[in-house]
Image (cartoon, rainbow, N blue to C red):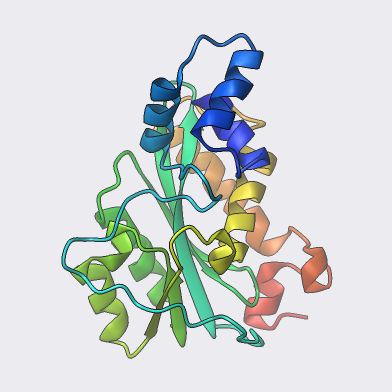
Length: 230
């Protein structure tokens, strides 16, 4: 799973068959069935780079994607969220984050050992305590199509947008965040436990928000752009 995670981050277009062949070249004794099972546990969708950590909640509405052709020009215009797999030395956890698209500012994040909706609701509540967006974009996972999650957004008059299935670029900024988190933090460390992961991720997100310069932001930090700090 550690090898699959690193290779998938480099080549997110690898499905089960390509990933199997890559592992075989490295001398790993695997077959398609094992690789498919592991990728499903990790929440990796086989053809496109969009993580698909679950299907939509039963009986719940799928909202249209509202951001195609929209110019993002101010903080709190669009927020988005997503879940990714984070490896530990022994095991793994899931990480969810809420991000402001304009500034790339990470408003909140949480980790969990399961894909229950609670940790996503906690991250949402933490983000909404700081403000609220005009549009909130998610994928079609069960956590984000749940009545509890959608209800929190609609009760505040926030418009809900959802990625098209298999379309990674619909949520491109948070996909880039996951690459940064993994290459700049997760892959250069070996988290010993959930507590160790939380401590290190907390330090990384503080660095990411306040000190990491982004070329696309004119070499400003996300916090500078989100809070209007010169």
